[in-house]
Length: 274
Image 1: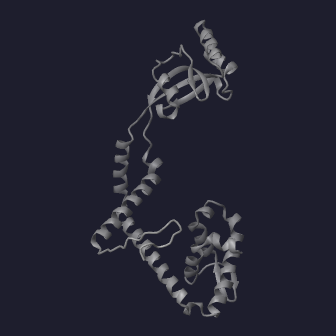
Image 2 (image 1 turned 135 degrees about the vertical axis):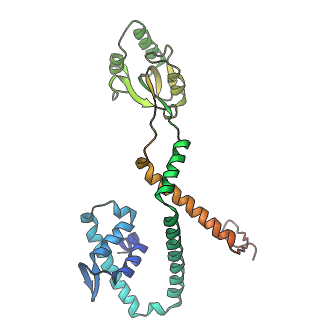
Image 3 (image 1 turned 90 degrees about the vertical axis):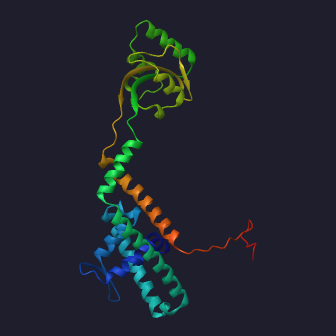
């Protein structure tokens, strides 16, 4: 039971506060206390691990967790846990965390407009201009001698794709085709040679990398398209949220009177400047 309760953590506590407002399908009753379907849905949505899973798979676990929590909660209430100093201190800490989170959410939502996100996308395009990509094929060999033998065959008019299919260690690449890639995508030794070739040219000297010996044939080149706004929207939202949060916190701290005591500890964690 302890593992199940830990899995849901604070999400269950938040869900219990919402139960009183739920006026829809009741899925369980514990000593008269109702557990509703909307509570189950809220917990699932708030937990990253559970949100991606189908409801069919997690529903039994969630119901069992809420039942477990209900019986524990009721037992604790009967023993007046709410009257203890530990409870009051914990609730103060929880209140501080909840108020801080909701305040940040409110302020970020106010500033994170579609207009601001589109402006961020324009900056994203400036910071990430189209990069040059090239297509190429290669034949990977185990030894330099094998690579030189391939180059000799090419010099005599052999077909590159046929040689790649027959001799290359990369058996999964039809004709040795690598598709399009940027300089950064390949190991430096490979890119340095490949990007010096003109379309249709192949290396006259084998190229050594950590994978073996390569014979490379250059294809055409293009500029990679900048991702659309829709493709990077989630990234922009996340980045802007982090930026807005940092700016907001820094602004609040600049206006606050803050004092901090510098403490020193030894390697065992004992306080030195008592």
